[in-house]
Amino acid sequence: MKNYHVSITKVFGAALTNTITVEAEDKYGAIERAINANWEPAYNSITQNNMSDSYVIAEVKVDGVKIESTPLNNHLLDEAMYVNSLREETQ
Image 1 (cartoon, rainbow, N blue to C red):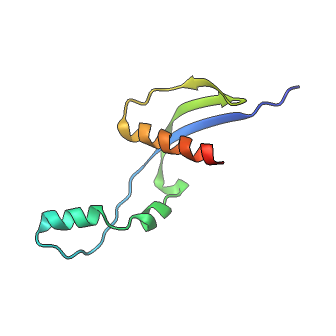
Image 2 (image 1 turned 90 degrees about the vertical axis):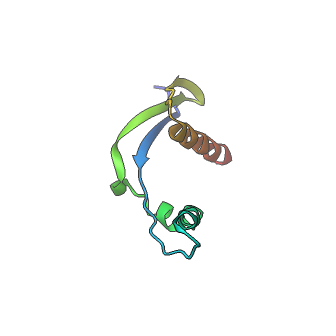
């Protein structure tokens, strides 16, 4: 039997809430500061337990050759796929 190197890319859903206290001139300034705050602790809290159970198989590769690719038609999911592809290139 032959061995195959198979890569399956799943795209999951996750939602994060970052609650902080900020000083600002008004509520719109506060929103802007909160958006630009340090989200790293929230990002680092993503685990299998706080992701959606549902997923989309976005891409299948066998021996480095793309066999299947699903257009996601959503800019957030497309961006997630792009970021994942950059990570794969550096490995």
